[in-house]
Amino acid sequence: MMSMPMSTVVAKSNVQVLRVQASPGAQLSARLPAPFTNRGQRSACKSRGHRIIRSGLLDFLNPQTGSTSARADELVSELLDLARSTNGGAKARLETREQLEELAQELQRFRPRAPTRSPLFPGTYKVLYTSNPNAPGGPVLRSAPGQAVFTGQQLRQTLEKPDVFLNEVAFKTLGLFPGTALQEGRWRALDGNRYVVDLEPAALKVAGNAGLSQQSEAVQRKFEVLYLDERVRVVRFLPDADSDSQPQLFVFEREIEDAEDDIEEEEDEPEEVPAALPFLRGRGRAGLATEAERSYAQEASAGTKRIGRKTAAAPAQVPDAKTEEVKRREMVRAQLAEITVAYKEAQAETRTALKQLKDFERESAQARRQSAPALDMVRIADATAEAAEQQLQAAREVAANADEQLKAASSALVELERRVRQR
Image (tube, one colour):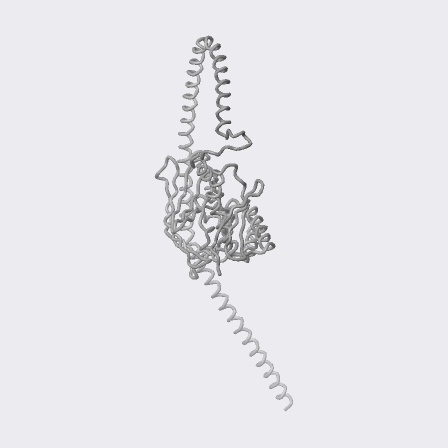
């Protein structure tokens, strides 16, 4: 006979044990710090209990041995340490790329079942590494000139249910003006391990220059999840069979959520009136609070009297305070003026740098167009040389055959002369 799932909270010293009975003979438990008051106890269970129960149930349905889990954690730590040093893949050497590829392949052996359906799959991630350094933000941002102009780049990717997808690159132009490159899209799961993302055109925007934008084409990308846990998501881009693109490896680190929501829930709950405690002589905490308030009021009254005796000397200090305030305001105005001038100069430098970058891209495109005919001529010359080489080889073969025939004719002539002499 199956028993209904139930949960119990058992207090042991200063630690609480939350137990969840999933089925007869199977029990999950998680250790929680014991709150001081009943209000904190309910809040802690309310804000964190559901996550603990969900994690426990997932572990129960997806059992792992201790050695397997330890090995996976070791591989994840090594992968994260190595990926963090690559600046999104831009500074990764060939040896580092090979090591990351080997770690990803080994981690794939520990991949959970149906990761695209896992509650761990959605979230906000930092882009730690990609085998194509230009993939996260495009060549304008991720190239060497782009990183020199758009400094402090932070790469993020957000997936939310049911289908929200967002690529974001935050940066500061010349280290001063914040900007973002955003690319939105929608994702959907193909099966338990693969998913597709329909990406919309991306836009590059710099603060103060709303017109500076660069659009890319809308595309569709298919990915396979190699590994997923509470810390990392490792995926591989799968190009189409008829595409010239190569598979690409991505390493994402989950951003840790702040615990402020739990604290706010605890603060918003109404305070309960606690019962009187016997070791406080029946007065309860309210009685102690009343006595503490009286003591504080007496000390505050004494402090007010001391302050009153010093009030007579205060008017003499008012003019000095006003003078200091005037000086401080003038100093702030001067600093604001300097900042405004620096801002305008930096804005002009930014426009100049962006113009130079666009000129460089235009010249590069023109050079590619100009070199195209030359490349065609080189290809034609190569083809002509190859044909001439083939004709020369044929001529050599004809000459060799002619030499053999000449030798045969000479031999026949010598034999004929010998016979004539004998007669």
